[in-house]
Image 1 (tube, rainbow, N blue to C red):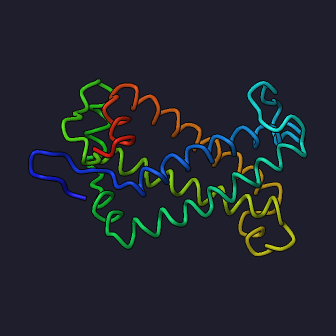
Image 2: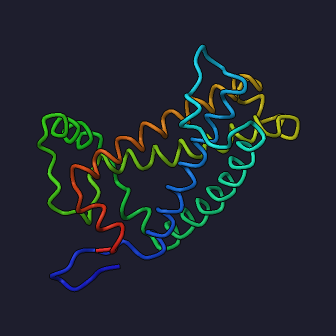
Length: 200
């Protein structure tokens, strides 16, 4: 939505709503997922129970499935509205990899410009697209872990049940890393948080 010439582009209300619902769903999924992981660890470590959700395996599974459906339907609506409104193409493409390299270099030097918050830079575009990919991968690998017998082709594409668990874990780790960087960038540029709350 474009405002008057002296105002910034607004994040539509539907976009802001989906953004905050996604945040809640992702946090619930991560915390309950860590409790589920602890019940049968893949690697030689577990997560401290104080930062997990559910209290026990059955409780964690209930939280995980509830948050899973929330993320699934919210994500579908998010992608649908972004596509039909043309916002997805307008905001995320094109991505020029020369721009990604130069803006990453500027970011590491602490010189990345944030003058126009209504436009995503190349690094943001790539990061947000990767986040979408991680979420899709989480859903697909989660289906194999949850209903392995019902999705045999998907299970085989992931190299079997055990490999699907590993894919699920690393996709979760990538999403946690994205979220941490995202929060850090918001802390550096607080105006972006205000935009996602007020829309302008």
